[in-house]
Amino acid sequence: MLAKSKKNAPKVVTIHDVARYAGVSSMTVSRTINGTKYVRPDLREKVQATIKALNYTVNQSARNTRVGATGPRIGILYSNPSPSYLNEIMLGGLQQSSRSGCQLLLEECGGLASQKTALKKLLAAGVDGVILPPPLCDSRQTVNMLKAGGVMALALATARPMEEVSSVRIDDYQGALAMTRYIIKLGHKDIGFIKGDPAHTPADLRYVGFVAAMEEAGLKVDDSKVVPGMFTYRSGLLAGEALLKRPDPPTAIFASNDDMAAAVMAIAHGLGIKVPEQLTVCGFDDTPVASTIWPPLTTIHQPIVALGRTAVAIMTEQIKKARTGERPEAVHQLMKFTLVERASAAKAPA
Image 1: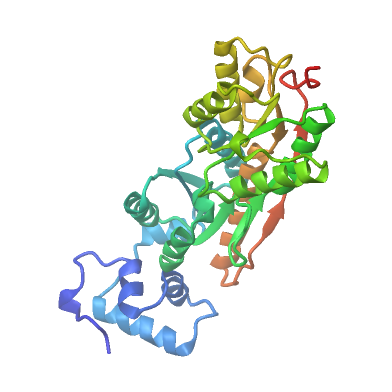
Image 2: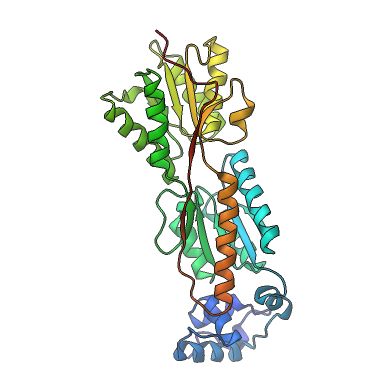
């Protein structure tokens, strides 16, 4: 028996209304309408009864879009504070979308309320899947909201992927380990570290990698020289001041991303500290700012453009499988990082 009668239904009934009244996912409703397999007989009967009770009719224009008259529609939901990082992701995504024949829809959000609003916009636009750049890549709540709407998700640049959600990432732990070893090899023992946004899992692994390399070399991590950051330039300014205005500043600073590293260098220049002669500064990600500041930044190159391309390629293939009635398995793609040596790092001062 249906929870609501026809007269209580919305004036314009959508596939999501049918799913809500029937107590199933939008994907189940779509599969029932399209006559594909993987729908249990009892659920199929329930959906068909709900369609009849609500007098739901298929929006043929929207259906043509979803079943192949045009390519898959992929949403990108972002709240990343680093414009350069997002630009690189979008560049890769757009490159791949032109090859794959899919459409990309971009929506910005902030807190939970705006996330819900942005997701509603994407669902109303008929997206088949949504790519989640950091920090939303680690949000179980966001993933669950997408699942409830019958839309698949892909986590981009997460450090701890969810088993059932596809992901594209690098090994942040190994990247931080490699960079810290490099700084130690230059003779630095007094090394400061700037953490990243604690809501983003790579921030934690980058710190763990730093600590592991220090312990491996028999060096003590000075907790007073490990300062918080939020992956933003402003947080890097505050962190840089905290480290460089103390009476015993470190000889090297490893920031968890390039924006914060660039801010540290700005503080150093303002205080008359020479980089790299008196201070080595290193970052992580290799966004465009790393090669445009002076001196150019030594950093871990995360192939962000390639991450964006790969995310769109994986999502496109999964959407195509879902449209034929298959149940796509989660894909977890681990990509390579490289350490890029530039002029911001040098041997420790004597």
